[in-house]
Image (tube, rainbow, N blue to C red; front, side):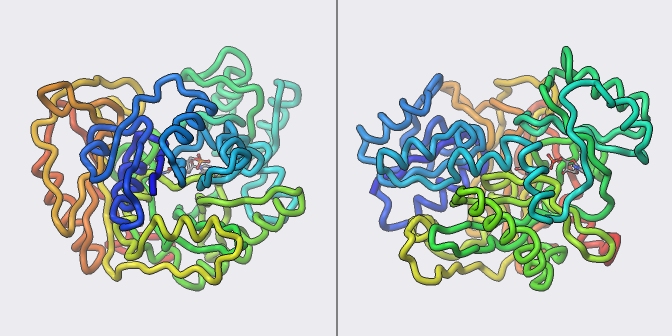
Length: 430
Ligand code: AMP
Ligand code: GLY
């Protein structure tokens, strides 16, 4: 069978690598992919610059594609699933209405509130009317979020009321740090530990947990510096044990799927809840993503011990019996190597001296690379995501950093403390 995968990052490299291992798969077209992805078995990279939804559909029809897997949120929010479903080509991901959970923070927050799903208290503003009074009545710090998609740059945690008012006003008018918004949400700052819970919501209504993982969103060691797309991850995490997984499914995921169903919206695809778990062990949703996390996907897919292509296909079949998923007992750790300056301005086209080699325990996923005819060069903020397995968390971390030590380019930056908090039992409740 022919598969088409949309996206260009480390998550899509991991999806491609895992799907290419299936005996059922003949060809994989990745649009637009990256250099690392182009090196995987069965893969053809397709330059899809300026493609609209109808161009993806035409490509799929012309190339006998039987399954489409969508990596990033943007095409999902733009309704690519609806177009493929209407034509009758299988596509894995939520439709446009379901992807609103990620596409609009206001929709998502109102949905939580209407369905008693635990989240931070919030208020939405589409103008500055009442803004100052509201901010004055809040306990600092508070969180400002832009309603629309902002590629991870739309969240501001602010300590001072004056600063908060300034940022909020700017966001609603000319913009702040290059981000502008028609609507903003101002919400309470929640204290606790963050973890990522991802699952598949299958057409047979089954919720299939995709083990547990933890991201490291801040740029610098010790969770300092700017927010990024994610600087490293590991899986599993003690933050989500079996009891917590049940709580998350019962109190968050099931009410979400049921709440959407009541609105006539059927959710299918990956669903990712960014959680904050408080000191008492109560999970709150910070945000929903309608896709896998990056770099969490790299860690979890390294641990997946069954055929991903078959798993996705079964998940799209309304008649599937109970779908089983198998995980390796090993732990996985992913360290993201990024360009100096990320998540703001950074240089591209820097020669990577050695991109390293894969072995049984380690996989070098490419997040932003291109081949310039002679060398592999950087082509993004996040460049490589080095992922390693180990018998325990410590070993997976050691294996990942051992491989990191073999790679370098001018301006390579990375966090040196991935998983340290868990290993040193520094969580607020450990
Ligand atoms: P989001 O894109 O909504 O996940 O927000 C990005 C990051 O901002 C999260 O990973 C948290 O670290 C932080 N954050 C977002 N909302 C809150 C909140 N209500 N309380 C505390 N931290 C938050
Ligand atoms: N790693 C966080 C995200 O993918 O949104």
